[in-house]
Image (cartoon, rainbow, N blue to C red; front, side, top):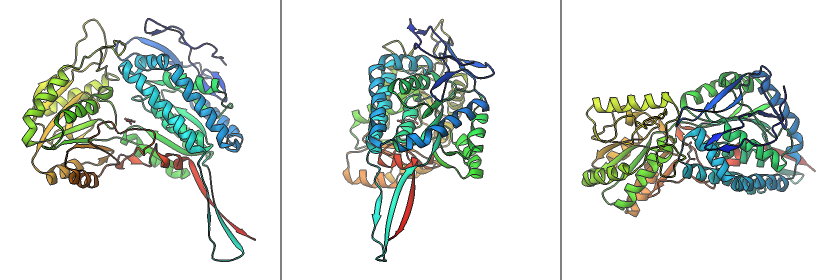
Length: 496
Ligand code: SIN
């Protein structure tokens, strides 16, 4: 059954009225052949927002077919033409920012102001990589023989599969699609089942901007394993980019072995946030709140362990707790809200488990410590929580909590805190606050992390590489290097 999606759904009183979303395959909107669909719900209220098709392997296969057919034409399209189309989508995103942000808040829960910020952040990846696509330079290399010329060409890797998470439903898609499309690749995208609407809304803009059919395809499914098996079994898919858990990332590494597919993986973190005695105190407190509670603590780069040097520990705990007390919990559509719901019941249970473990091991709850009761509404809310006397042995310090819980751990020396900060299998983001310039360099060099914020709690930006050391992933997204992930390098030796 083919459905042409003509008019975008109407937003009315915070609910999506027209709920007919469809898969985007080869430029056409269609439902799953089986007719299967699943509901997208609002994590703040438990209400159903919309239905989306529950695609199986057949639809994924059709999307790969469409991407493979579109590939030669798109790869041969001049880079400035590809760039202009990408810039057009970025402009459309900013024109429709309010609508896109509202849909994101409805399906993901984040406060509307953060959702607006994410739309701008997401658009920036398209605009920035449009420019990078125009600067994919090759090389000529001096040969050692007079009758040879050595050339290095850079070409798109081919059809790529992009698997994106629910915590940044727009920005994680464009952080992959921007460089992929700018490089000349075609894509099969699979958004997370909790938040597919943002991706489908972006799909509409790619169609409206005039992208050729098949260049961008979007599959929604509740069966990520079938999706992964289909893309890994198909030789035409040359690369897979995934943002999500380390556990799933490892499984994708195993699956990629058979077809030797290229992988980019942006996986879990366990970010240390270090405050030295000599820090700009107010900036450190504000930075810790911003880093910890962004998206209700549901980012891979959120501060997970807050290390505070003993000389300022008590003062920091008091000031930080006062800031946290002012964070209003509620539905993200309420302009006062700073802390939205957790994505689902499972996420809430993980937070409960981590806090319970910390308290059992002697942590002191300075504020919060339990679910937040919004009265009449269903929803997965947790009261922003600060735990004093936390230790590295606690689950909150060993694993990513992915919720609004801040454990404060005291330390004495620089050497000790570096050792504790690096004692993790993860290495995505780390932060530290100090006014000592020599220490800035020493600590930045010593931290085994792909992203280091020195007196900066929010380092993410389209222009800089994003990715991790150790089990936090493979490759980098963003920055000049981000487009390399979607390019093959070909050496041509020319005899003359
Ligand atoms: C993430 O949590 O993976 C993305 C966060 C960011 O881009 O800052």
